[in-house]
Length: 428
Ligand code: MEV
Image (cartoon, rainbow, N blue to C red):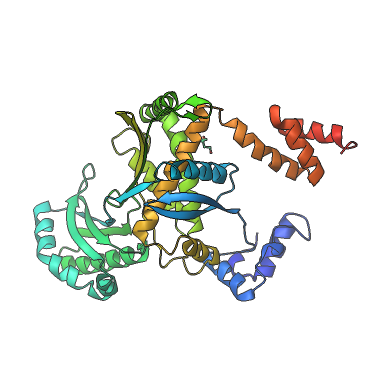
């Protein structure tokens, strides 16, 4: 590989890759580009060494009733059945009052990690005496956020148990409708620099060191919940009596609460929905994932993010998790499909979007567990899987039609579909 690859033009980079692949042309490189040059350039600038656009399906799940408002949710996912499952749960719950959401808190956090090898009382005293100065010195950075109703909530120094002479300064902020990563990191670096100066002015430069400053993606004070409930009247659901269905459903949720092996898969299913919407709105799904799983383990044992209760014939099903997202800044205005997603959601505030995302996670979990305790997960999956396999064989429309019928009561696998196509190649 060339030294200084990043300095090559895009075409030169593509040529290097093609040479590496031993070919002169490859579908998936240049033919994935936007026609509009400026838009393509914008995409390329999101990252580095960009040589193509990587497409994922952008689907929509209608019929979501969240806090009495109807939504069509945009979902970006490559996994078949995810959108269909979300839409199915949305329709079911829209007939039972829909989702009710609640923001528990909206605080985000950042840390400055530092070391001090003298008596900790000295450090705490200097920090407390400097706090006001440190906060005043952030004013240039925080002014606009303050005007929007956000800004710094608190600044605290704590020891880091288990690590000798190590401390963290905890910054808590509100970032309104922004995800706030740049705001938090800039504020932290400003405080760190000024605190370091104060320590040097007091001749502690050989005893004090700033290690680093960074926001925390763990935001247990930026939490949202969503809930659905219904009276378990005598109705049928997937061929089962509703009371039996919801008792079995609750048992499945309880299994995920007690068994970590199950909880991971259970929560993965929740994140199928959450990530798809986070991605569709141009937010950082890695941050949401990391935080959700840490939150699921906050008791010291990894457990389910959802909870089911049955009390006096009322079945209720809920989710609670931290979701730190933004509806302004970041990719929201840069990525045309992120902008479209926010338009589709009626340009929600961050608070409202948090509720929508949590509701989708709950819906996704409802559908997955519903399938698991009734038909099994493969039935729905395989229908979509069949279409994907047929697509890989470039099956004609007619072949797809006949194959769907043929496989309606058979096991779908790559080889069974191939055999089917070979056998039926003449007759279709
Ligand atoms: C598959 O992506 C997700 C599920 O495994 C989730 C679950 O088991 O609850 C179906």
